[in-house]
Image (cartoon, rainbow over all chains, first blue to last red; front, top):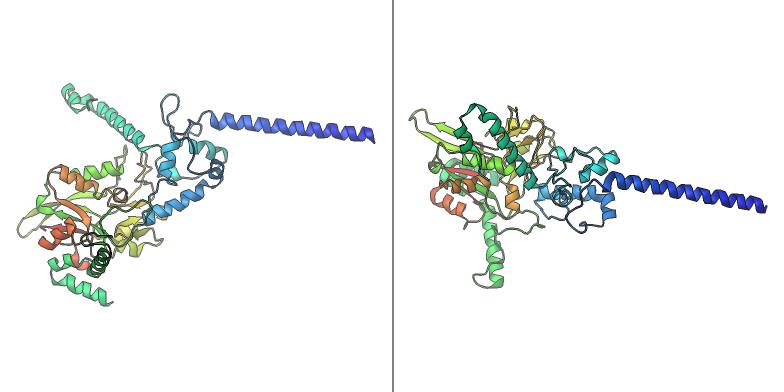
Length: 163
Length: 263
């Protein structure tokens, strides 16, 4: 009887050890996949409890969506614009990730892992406004340079915005 | 029904009368409200101001009706600053290789064939009180906000384009191609209809102007006045009262929020 009990205890302990190992591996994997590549948000804490947000953010965004479009309520707290402004920050090289980059974009990093296909960002901005405007200026400048090959050098200088 | 008849009667009389028929009943009602609240506080101190910026958390109400007045005589033919400003405000930037770019506002030249007299004017969504686009929308995506702004709720728009066919002003565009670089305040995408939203983002932020009106003033033309049609003291209402303003296709009885002077 005693031998049986001690055998059971060994099995119990090894099971617990395996469980700890699996969980540990899982968390290492999770950290590796999400926390390292996604740049840190601007603010110190989220507008709601972070755990609650992980489960319910789509409900708040959905409610706020109708409030804004139909009733013209534009509080910042639950607005998608506010989420983006805070969570989408430059990475180590100073670039802002697009939603198509699931490694670095805050929303995409989790959606990809959880296999969520949602098309918010086929219409909504996935970066803060100033980043989009700067990118637009840059592409205009490049287009200008490309098209100006056939134009005189003077015109190119005249057309190029001065810094 | 009686109210409708009254409105049609006013519309058919003359254009000057039509311009004053802007929600006359509502205006009287608000006048009463303002008077009552004013009495409650002190002489000259009004509790209730129709054109004041609303707090962000407050829903829009029909106490205001936003509108624009275009003075065609001050609109320069070779100027399209309003169009450029609109495109920049809402990120309506031409996509590379696209031949189907949206237009929310466009410049038109209208000519009277009998006299040869030509006028240049901006044309955009007229923000009708009785919008045909809202009547025909099968999903309710096309709707009129409480403050009179006609919008497309792109979350419910299925891209059927009935509204484009119904609009007498050809004010709406369909997005045919995938878009990039949309701005946060003007989300837009492939498969949806869109049109002038009277810079609803600016209005809700309390800017009390639109991008086109701002650009027109900046260019020195001052041809576009933005304001509250329900507030008899507003710039737009006083101008309409003094000089009148035409609706384009007034015969349709849509009671447009955009009026034109000098047509």
